[in-house]
Image (cartoon, helix red, strand yellow):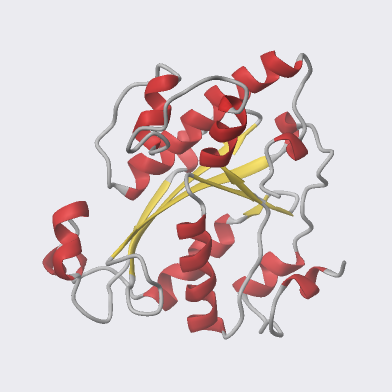
Length: 227
Protein backbone atom coordinates (compact mmCIF):
# COMPACT_ATOMS: atom_id res chain seq x y z
CA UNK A 1 0.00 0.00 0.00
CA UNK A 2 1.33 3.47 -0.89
CA UNK A 3 2.23 5.49 2.16
CA UNK A 4 -0.02 8.36 1.24
CA UNK A 5 -2.93 5.94 0.91
CA UNK A 6 -2.76 5.65 4.69
CA UNK A 7 -4.14 9.17 4.91
CA UNK A 8 -7.77 9.93 4.36
CA UNK A 9 -7.11 13.17 2.48
CA UNK A 10 -4.24 14.57 0.40
CA UNK A 11 -1.43 15.72 2.67
CA UNK A 12 -0.10 19.26 2.35
CA UNK A 13 3.70 19.67 2.34
CA UNK A 14 5.13 19.98 5.82
CA UNK A 15 5.44 17.96 9.03
CA UNK A 16 2.41 15.77 8.37
CA UNK A 17 3.70 14.88 4.92
CA UNK A 18 7.08 14.01 6.44
CA UNK A 19 5.35 11.49 8.71
CA UNK A 20 3.33 10.09 5.81
CA UNK A 21 6.43 9.68 3.67
CA UNK A 22 8.46 7.91 6.35
CA UNK A 23 8.29 4.11 5.86
CA UNK A 24 6.79 2.00 8.63
CA UNK A 25 8.59 -0.87 10.34
CA UNK A 26 7.72 -4.27 8.80
CA UNK A 27 5.67 -6.39 11.17
CA UNK A 28 8.37 -9.08 11.23
CA UNK A 29 11.04 -6.64 12.49
CA UNK A 30 12.70 -7.83 15.73
CA UNK A 31 11.19 -5.69 18.46
CA UNK A 32 14.65 -4.76 19.73
CA UNK A 33 15.21 -2.96 16.39
CA UNK A 34 11.92 -1.02 16.44
CA UNK A 35 11.71 2.62 17.48
CA UNK A 36 8.58 3.52 19.44
CA UNK A 37 7.25 6.74 20.87
CA UNK A 38 5.28 6.58 24.12
CA UNK A 39 2.61 9.25 23.99
CA UNK A 40 0.26 10.51 26.66
CA UNK A 41 -2.13 13.43 26.39
CA UNK A 42 -3.91 15.66 28.84
CA UNK A 43 -7.11 17.14 27.48
CA UNK A 44 -10.05 19.24 28.64
CA UNK A 45 -12.36 16.22 28.14
CA UNK A 46 -12.76 12.99 26.23
CA UNK A 47 -14.49 14.18 23.03
CA UNK A 48 -12.14 15.75 20.44
CA UNK A 49 -15.13 17.39 18.77
CA UNK A 50 -15.75 19.60 21.80
CA UNK A 51 -12.64 19.30 23.99
CA UNK A 52 -9.06 20.44 23.47
CA UNK A 53 -5.52 19.13 23.77
CA UNK A 54 -3.66 20.68 26.70
CA UNK A 55 -0.33 18.82 26.85
CA UNK A 56 1.74 16.12 25.18
CA UNK A 57 4.09 13.73 26.95
CA UNK A 58 6.57 12.18 24.48
CA UNK A 59 9.08 9.47 25.46
CA UNK A 60 11.14 7.47 22.94
CA UNK A 61 11.73 3.73 23.31
CA UNK A 62 14.76 2.47 21.40
CA UNK A 63 16.53 -0.87 21.57
CA UNK A 64 14.16 -1.91 24.39
CA UNK A 65 15.49 0.98 26.47
CA UNK A 66 14.03 4.36 27.43
CA UNK A 67 16.46 7.20 26.56
CA UNK A 68 15.01 9.85 28.87
CA UNK A 69 17.19 12.53 27.29
CA UNK A 70 14.74 12.43 24.38
CA UNK A 71 11.63 12.89 26.53
CA UNK A 72 9.53 16.00 25.95
CA UNK A 73 6.63 17.67 27.75
CA UNK A 74 4.79 20.13 25.51
CA UNK A 75 1.97 22.31 26.80
CA UNK A 76 -0.71 23.79 24.56
CA UNK A 77 -2.67 27.02 24.98
CA UNK A 78 -6.31 26.13 24.33
CA UNK A 79 -8.74 28.34 22.44
CA UNK A 80 -11.23 28.19 25.30
CA UNK A 81 -10.94 27.57 29.01
CA UNK A 82 -10.01 24.23 30.56
CA UNK A 83 -13.08 24.06 32.77
CA UNK A 84 -13.37 21.43 35.47
CA UNK A 85 -10.66 19.27 33.86
CA UNK A 86 -8.06 21.33 35.75
CA UNK A 87 -9.06 19.46 38.90
CA UNK A 88 -7.73 16.26 37.31
CA UNK A 89 -4.47 17.37 35.66
CA UNK A 90 -3.69 20.69 37.33
CA UNK A 91 -3.34 22.55 34.03
CA UNK A 92 -5.22 25.74 34.80
CA UNK A 93 -5.94 28.60 32.42
CA UNK A 94 -3.17 30.62 34.10
CA UNK A 95 -0.64 27.80 33.68
CA UNK A 96 -1.43 27.45 29.96
CA UNK A 97 -1.74 31.16 29.17
CA UNK A 98 1.90 31.43 28.05
CA UNK A 99 1.99 28.10 26.17
CA UNK A 100 2.00 28.13 22.36
CA UNK A 101 -1.22 27.25 20.48
CA UNK A 102 -1.75 23.85 18.88
CA UNK A 103 -0.59 24.86 15.36
CA UNK A 104 2.82 25.74 16.83
CA UNK A 105 3.13 22.62 19.00
CA UNK A 106 1.86 19.96 16.58
CA UNK A 107 4.81 20.22 14.14
CA UNK A 108 7.21 19.28 16.95
CA UNK A 109 5.03 16.31 17.90
CA UNK A 110 4.94 15.12 14.29
CA UNK A 111 8.69 15.61 13.93
CA UNK A 112 9.20 13.35 16.96
CA UNK A 113 7.14 10.63 15.24
CA UNK A 114 9.85 10.26 12.60
CA UNK A 115 12.86 8.31 13.83
CA UNK A 116 16.42 8.76 12.54
CA UNK A 117 16.78 6.76 9.36
CA UNK A 118 14.09 7.89 8.86
CA UNK A 119 11.24 5.55 9.72
CA UNK A 120 7.87 6.25 11.23
CA UNK A 121 8.02 5.48 14.94
CA UNK A 122 5.43 3.10 16.33
CA UNK A 123 3.02 4.89 18.64
CA UNK A 124 2.93 3.44 22.16
CA UNK A 125 0.12 4.33 24.56
CA UNK A 126 -2.12 2.91 27.27
CA UNK A 127 -5.73 2.74 26.04
CA UNK A 128 -4.39 4.20 22.81
CA UNK A 129 -7.83 5.09 21.43
CA UNK A 130 -7.70 8.40 23.29
CA UNK A 131 -4.29 9.37 21.89
CA UNK A 132 -5.00 8.27 18.32
CA UNK A 133 -8.43 9.94 18.21
CA UNK A 134 -7.18 13.29 19.51
CA UNK A 135 -4.02 13.19 17.38
CA UNK A 136 -6.00 12.51 14.20
CA UNK A 137 -8.44 15.28 15.09
CA UNK A 138 -5.56 17.69 15.72
CA UNK A 139 -3.97 16.88 12.35
CA UNK A 140 -7.28 17.38 10.57
CA UNK A 141 -7.79 20.68 12.36
CA UNK A 142 -4.33 22.06 11.57
CA UNK A 143 -3.50 20.37 8.23
CA UNK A 144 -6.87 19.23 6.89
CA UNK A 145 -5.82 15.57 6.86
CA UNK A 146 -5.40 12.77 9.37
CA UNK A 147 -2.54 10.36 9.88
CA UNK A 148 -2.51 6.65 10.57
CA UNK A 149 0.26 5.12 12.63
CA UNK A 150 1.29 1.67 13.73
CA UNK A 151 0.09 1.40 17.33
CA UNK A 152 1.05 -0.68 20.35
CA UNK A 153 -1.48 -0.43 23.17
CA UNK A 154 -0.17 -1.58 26.54
CA UNK A 155 -3.73 -2.23 27.69
CA UNK A 156 -4.16 -4.74 24.85
CA UNK A 157 -0.76 -6.29 25.56
CA UNK A 158 -1.84 -6.77 29.18
CA UNK A 159 -5.02 -8.49 28.03
CA UNK A 160 -2.95 -10.89 25.92
CA UNK A 161 -0.73 -11.70 28.88
CA UNK A 162 -3.71 -12.41 31.13
CA UNK A 163 -5.74 -14.35 28.57
CA UNK A 164 -4.61 -17.73 29.90
CA UNK A 165 -4.55 -16.72 33.58
CA UNK A 166 -7.55 -16.74 35.94
CA UNK A 167 -8.35 -13.26 37.23
CA UNK A 168 -11.26 -11.24 38.54
CA UNK A 169 -12.10 -8.14 36.52
CA UNK A 170 -12.50 -5.57 39.27
CA UNK A 171 -13.13 -1.87 38.67
CA UNK A 172 -9.99 -0.26 37.26
CA UNK A 173 -8.34 -3.63 36.59
CA UNK A 174 -6.73 -2.43 33.34
CA UNK A 175 -5.88 1.12 34.40
CA UNK A 176 -2.24 2.06 33.88
CA UNK A 177 -1.43 2.12 37.59
CA UNK A 178 -3.11 -1.26 38.19
CA UNK A 179 -1.18 -2.85 35.32
CA UNK A 180 2.09 -1.44 36.67
CA UNK A 181 1.39 -2.89 40.12
CA UNK A 182 0.96 -6.37 38.62
CA UNK A 183 4.43 -6.01 37.10
CA UNK A 184 5.90 -4.74 40.41
CA UNK A 185 6.64 -1.28 39.04
CA UNK A 186 6.67 1.79 41.30
CA UNK A 187 3.65 4.03 41.61
CA UNK A 188 3.79 7.49 40.02
CA UNK A 189 1.49 10.47 40.34
CA UNK A 190 -1.13 10.19 37.61
CA UNK A 191 -2.39 12.78 35.12
CA UNK A 192 0.89 14.37 34.13
CA UNK A 193 1.39 13.71 30.41
CA UNK A 194 5.16 13.24 30.70
CA UNK A 195 5.03 11.05 33.81
CA UNK A 196 2.27 8.90 32.32
CA UNK A 197 4.24 8.49 29.07
CA UNK A 198 7.27 7.30 31.07
CA UNK A 199 4.98 4.99 33.08
CA UNK A 200 3.57 3.53 29.87
CA UNK A 201 7.06 2.96 28.41
CA UNK A 202 8.23 1.19 31.58
CA UNK A 203 5.12 -0.98 31.63
CA UNK A 204 5.72 -1.94 28.01
CA UNK A 205 9.27 -3.13 28.71
CA UNK A 206 8.06 -5.18 31.69
CA UNK A 207 5.29 -6.70 29.57
CA UNK A 208 7.74 -7.56 26.79
CA UNK A 209 10.05 -9.33 29.23
CA UNK A 210 7.17 -11.50 30.43
CA UNK A 211 5.82 -12.12 26.93
CA UNK A 212 9.26 -13.07 25.62
CA UNK A 213 9.74 -15.52 28.50
CA UNK A 214 6.37 -17.07 27.78
CA UNK A 215 7.02 -17.47 24.06
CA UNK A 216 10.59 -18.63 24.46
CA UNK A 217 11.99 -16.46 21.69
CA UNK A 218 12.86 -12.84 20.94
CA UNK A 219 9.76 -10.81 20.15
CA UNK A 220 8.80 -9.37 16.79
CA UNK A 221 6.83 -6.19 16.27
CA UNK A 222 3.90 -8.34 15.20
CA UNK A 223 3.77 -9.89 18.67
CA UNK A 224 2.68 -6.61 20.26
CA UNK A 225 1.26 -4.52 17.42
CA UNK A 226 -2.42 -3.64 17.67
CA UNK A 227 -4.42 -5.47 14.94
